Length: 407
Image (cartoon, rainbow, N blue to C red; front, side, top):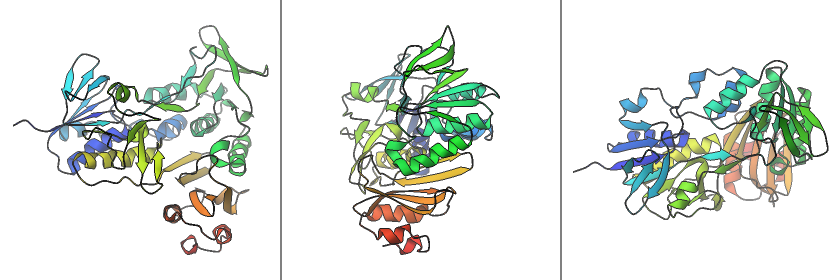
């Protein structure tokens, strides 16, 4: 009798954690992990942080040692691209024509950086950050005296800016909004990050759009809509990502800002699950659909999907969590506060010193919390968010009231 075969499409953190969890849970069937990159699975946060500054060892990014996959009888296929899923035949077709049969399938296909809609965006020296190879190319461009233009002042754009300044490059950041991260954080906290970068020599161009990237074969400058021309030895485009849903959509699975899955990360096809950046999952605590692009989601949702694939009862209810390190600022964020849904930002601590906790609230309920250079408070913030009930906002703002006592 043939063994059960689980196939994982996507060799990132979510896929690797799924394979690991399957073995830890005692699954002894076949596991095939298909990834289109040449490298074995790795974690992405160092790509915009330690690998750019040189503070992280190159091998520290990998999820497992090189020998782990063979030792655990996991068939890892790198440089292999899945091009179709036939759900009736239960096979995954690869670009080279091979068909891989599955009993359960996990789609962990991740996301792709959005392109910049401007002439010259395809010139050499215009870089995007998603893969290990991308990070290496950007790191090579961050040299002393280089002029680096970053398009987009989101988390990735700001982390690259911090790394570039730490490498003594000249940095211009072009952003369509009036502040970095304004839609996500609101004006008060967005100014914290604007001032942080200005203090380290970053030049911002707010309410600005790129008209053209100029150069012959290689980018040499960025022309803004107002006529400003910025010299550029490298241009980093960081204007968001789109989930890689083409494979799922072609297979007839429901897709809307990601692959639609329930709280157990299962699609409408009971034999197909999705995890990581590509999964738009129903969150049982927040009571809404959510697609999360951060490291912690890949880490935990891959493991949760694996247990669900084994038939275990799973309700993936981890609250969104992410972190950033920029210069001397360290931050953790827990929860979900969509733009337009919070009505007040409550702060405890000293914003000027960049030592504070901010809470995004709606009707007195804590939707999310961010601790900036204040540590060991994530469990308390998580409790406030999960409670989903109004709290005393004056006590929430008072640093003399322990967070555990805020009700």
